[in-house]
Length: 261
Image (cartoon, rainbow, N blue to C red; front, top):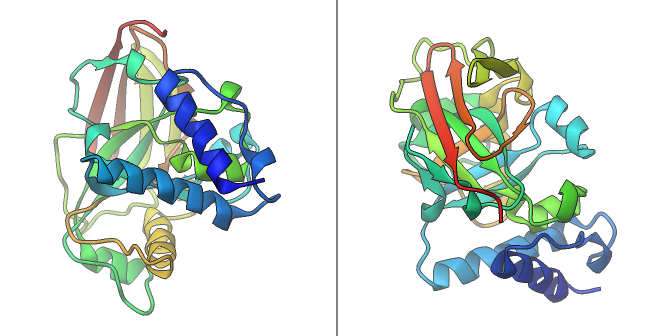
């Protein structure tokens, strides 16, 4: 059982555009640290070949999503520059393998988060603005047959993300009670509030900032943080047009074209 074998299995799935079996059989049972090492190897390889880290994502913050995937703790992954999709601009679905979508609150940092103690107050002070966002999650693991080790190794099942057009300062916003509604066409497909994201999106970002600092890659000014799903994730198919509205933050949209290969 080796992290190298797990990395190569996931790399082959990405290169061949074909989902692979889970990697948990290649890593010690429940060894999240080993899974993050696999993730880190992939990120380092991408950066070495020209990609730029633009932020982080928090996964598995919503109890409905954890239930959907059968995992019991949050995780995180890295956001790269080629994952960014402009609001409302069609996305070629063939870039993805098994896409699902979820609505989130994104934080854009104005200051580093490197304090000895990082809580909601420190996160708020470091935040430049927040914005409605859509995360298109994806898994290189066939059939989304994942445990925590699989998704961590697979960069927290990252795919693409869309930021809404309206940056909003945190002042006066109650992120816990912000209501989210996501529609596919005219059908409402996901609903939730900020309370569904680890109880408070500020708490979720504080968890990430502390974890990232302790792992030697602290959150830096200018980075985007996707704080976690506000409602259940929804499968994506060619032709789907999603729009999410988050109270106080406005709308964000994504349209998918092409066909799955």
